[in-house]
Every structure is written in structure tokens, then in C-alpha cells.
Amino acid sequence: MSYGYSARLININKKADHKMLGVKLGRVCVKQNIPVAKVSQHFGVSRQTVYNWFCGVNAPHTTCTDAIKVFIRSFKPSK
Image (cartoon, rainbow, N blue to C red; front, top):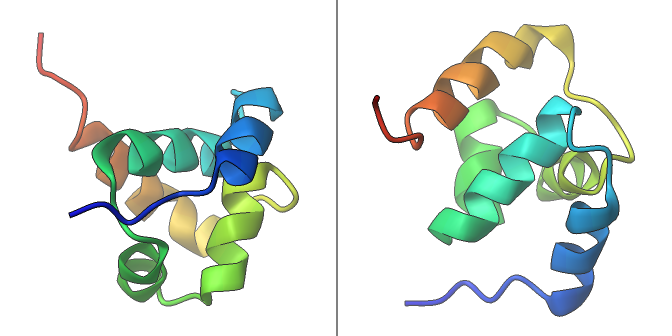
């Protein structure tokens, strides 16, 4: 099943600062086809907040950063 990230969102995410945690999260979610609704529920924030993270508009609040790092690491292949 495809959750259909828009080409616009993908393009904005690609152009955003790759060092930002929310942008990294966005790249993982697009690659893994994880729906924004699932991400927003997981972190207890709105879907709009997640989109803003993905686009680099806002950075995740410090209360979410550790959980986001763990989430991202869970999709990286182990060495």
C-alpha cells in the first residue's frame, strides 16, 4: 500500500537542511512509506507538525528528540 507522499513534499524535504532532525525523519518516512498520521500518533503531535518537521519549517521540541532519534535508528541497517 502506498501512502502517497506528494512530489512537492518530497522535493521540499530534499532541499531542506539534511542536518535537521525533522528532515531526517521525513526522509526515513518517505523511504519507508510510513504515513504521516502514524508518525503524528507515535510522537503525540499533529500531522501539520510532522509536515513542518519534514520540510524543515520547525524543529521537533526537545521532548521528542530522543524518541525521534531512536525511531530513525530503527530503520537504519546494522553494520
